[in-house]
Image (cartoon, rainbow, N blue to C red; front, side, top):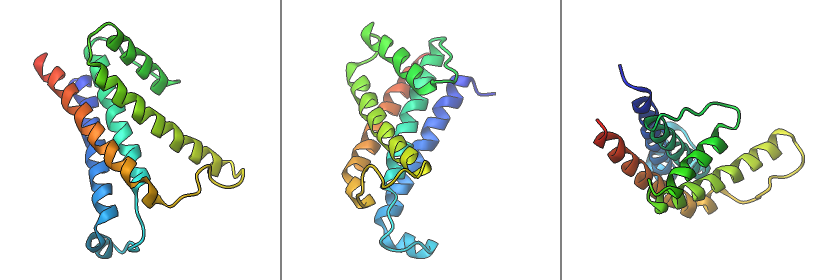
Length: 159
C-alpha cells in the first residue's frame, strides 16, 4: 500500500496531468471538434487551477515526509506557512518558495472570481476572455513541473 506521502505526490502528478491536458485542449481545435467543444472555448483558468493544486499537493507530500500533517480548516494557508518555515531554515531552495507564492496568488485570484460569481454580487472581478490567461497558464505549467520534479527527487532520495 502506498504511503500518504506517495498518495499526495500521486495526486500532485494527476493535477499536473490535468493542467497539461487542459492546455492542450485549449490550444488544439481538432481535439475540441472531436469532443464537441466550440473552437473559441479555452480552459486556461483550469490550467492555472490544476497547476496550483499540483504544487499544493507536492508541498503536502513534502511536509508529510517530514512528519507534518495539515488538516482543514485553512489547509492551504497552513501548508504554505509550514512549507515557508522549511525554506527559512534552509531545507528547501528559495526558488521553490517563489514558485509556490506565485501559484498561491493566482489561486487566490481565481477564488475571488468564483466568490463574486457565486454570491451574484455583480460582474466578475476581471472581465476578460480566457485567452488572456494563456501566458499565465503556460507559466503555471512550467512552475508546477519544476516544483513537482524537485519534491519528487527529495521523496525518492528518502526511500
